[in-house]
Length: 181
Image (cartoon, rainbow, N blue to C red; front, side, top):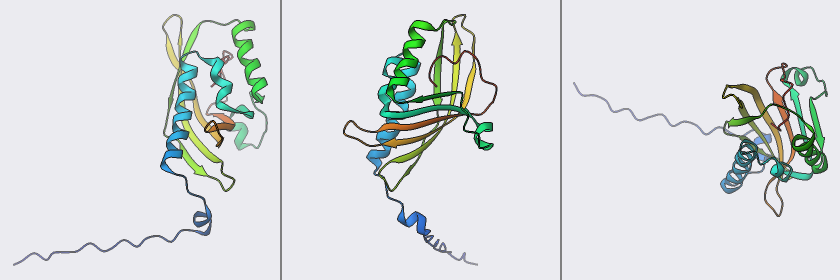
């Protein structure tokens, strides 16, 4: 009795939808540059280089912190809203000069971003995150979980964040949210 050799049935190549066919492509180098920008953002904050924070944004960039619950309900209400680098820089000044809080550090752990190019040359990116907080006592806890919904824009200086919406999983927000997320 001889064994029959079965050749695999070829898998048909799916036909792209009209939206997929019309979507612009993004080079591997551009994807790498975007992923690098997002990682550098987290490292700058974790390393207490918050003065660099506004430099990740376009001059008129928007930073918003909201909750999944507000987003689902269609509420435009946010916890934090900064429009433009001036407001971002003011937030850092307040952190360094005016705010009084217990000493602590953050550590961002981010997933691989899902990057989708847009017809206008910008890209949308969605990145999951967990932020741990370590207090001066050494106690470490999960501070925030959620996702970044970003619009990224290319420019002469590389990719920058045009819009960052931080969507927190929980509506329970710690009042010690002095550092950018």
